[in-house]
Length: 430
Ligand SMILES: O=C([O-])[C@@H](O)[C@@H](O)[C@H](O)[C@@H](O)C(=O)[O-]
Ligand SMILES: [Mg+2]
Image (cartoon, rainbow, N blue to C red; front, side, top):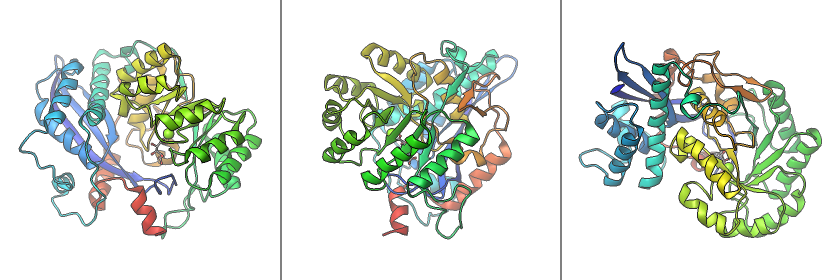
């Protein structure tokens, strides 16, 4: 399976005004679809991947696309090394101006864009490699006629439980009328949103994105959820927006109510201080984001559960391996998500199905974004809050080219290069 082309298509799809500690989700999510085209005996196969559509990530993928022709889609180790070397070396001769990517895609000058994130080579390399690894595994599975889960060691479960991901939200984006979800700005609104999520998808765990309102209001929302859904595990994630003092007060209120508390505060020291003061397990996708972060957190006893994410941890194999690390150090494992479509949902489901120690329902933003999916309907569906591992070879999903073209056109029409929840929020409430 020799790689003949790496096609990167930036897309933008609709997103409701979901509030978080940074600000609020913009009307469109920027993402990218990866197509890894391979040649081989009996014809080629194409593997799919999905990742964020930030300009820096697109730029790196574009650069890598110029270097991987002729490499084998089986040799993911060589591909990982190539990505690391290129990102560490910051190869010459490529236009990495902050709006380079948008200009390249559109041939026009952008009217607006957010600030360019500063790249950090090792961290970015894992993100960039991840998109390629998923596409390689999809191609390998298609070629061999087996689902990706079989390439990850085989399944330990046929269906993967997900959590209903609740957000405070406005009724709609300003100037666009109300969306189908309506407003959720207080405990009643959150409970109504949860009821809708549970009715539609059958979720058996619930997570509230916090860090938006004063902690007392968010604790009241958690209590309202507890009363409305007595049997369901609950989590809240303020994305480290709380001070240590606030968090210590909050855990006294939340004892006995939560399955886990995710990133109440920033950094290992403050997480350790909160952990020492409560029996609520602390979970994180912020203070342990790579293997290098395991030891400091372990030494301080700062967390009990890590949320992996193949987009961030370096792919599907690395995600399964993270399960082994967590088992070895006595931590639980859950899964983080960000706004995504069906290629990512399929990849998350294969990885989770192959990971024995995954003991908590995975996060997913999918219900917020499913209306504009780039994969053909049928392969992915929720039953009782779980997604069955797709049956087909590879990831088991097929690209809907009509939707892909439409979402690419939307991307071009926006002239935006980055996610900037803060600037959008400030544009509405200065
Ligand atoms: O989508 C959001 O607003 C979330 O806050 C997301 O950006 C986080 O990465 C994530 O969901 C988390 O668990 O921290
Ligand atoms: Mg989180």
